[in-house]
Length: 322
Image (cartoon, rainbow, N blue to C red; front, side, top):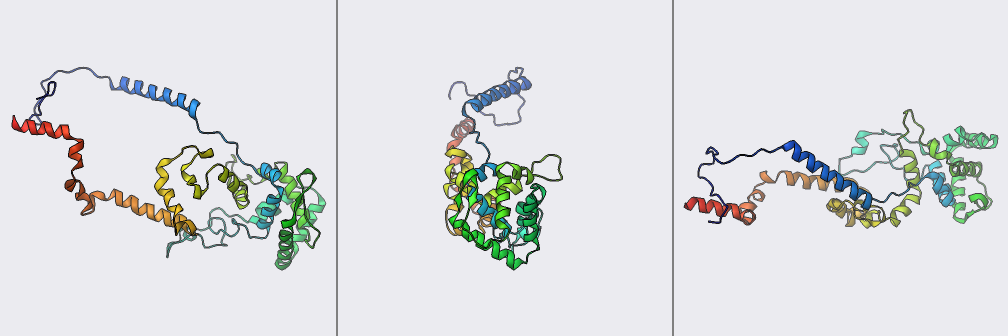
């Protein structure tokens, strides 16, 4: 028998007759907490996550005014990603679904967004005080839907030949665009001064913490996608696992983001609900391992646990022989 080892008693409930010594659990916990806190603070200072500056509409409209105006027109004519998304923003799309499961449709529109009104018409009416701009907005609002579509379509097509002029303005070839050029020029000016950032945060709450509208507006353009690509955060870059700048991030999400890299998930418009269903089924199976016949018997058939706890089983064997 190895020295220092006490053989296990055949009676596990035998009264303890060995020695005792005091043990201050609170003291031990306090020391451990203090050491972990100190290490955390030091590592945070030395290796903290990169503090990237947020993208704003002001920055976007100055760095790429053509993309901003193109996105604004798509919000005005209802062809943007947000305008056609469906619940929880509007009823213009079916939302993600799988067979008869339609959670977006069931939950309905909880955060209504009218892209033409919220992103273009309302900011122009409430911020800009120029009579010409108010007249252009009124002309557009009182025109028929067919006429509005003709103006925005012609203007969108002309943006393919747009150029950035003095003061980060956007110039396009002459054409029949109705009041749209005046509206877009004014909206671009408001955005470049930072006024649109504040206008889209206006809500009934005291603290302005709802960034849904500005984020969706920028997501309809290319500014967020371009930045995500540069920071290795796109879905096809396993971005869910990465920190900005391709720093190591949430490695435990590998199984979740793995499904987005393969077909049919990588090309499906319903990828999110499909992946969530698969991960839900896998998680449920993991929880129910003790109840699944066959699977629960694997440790008995392949007793790896005896290798891990070999010292314990050796002592049990010796105790049985003494």
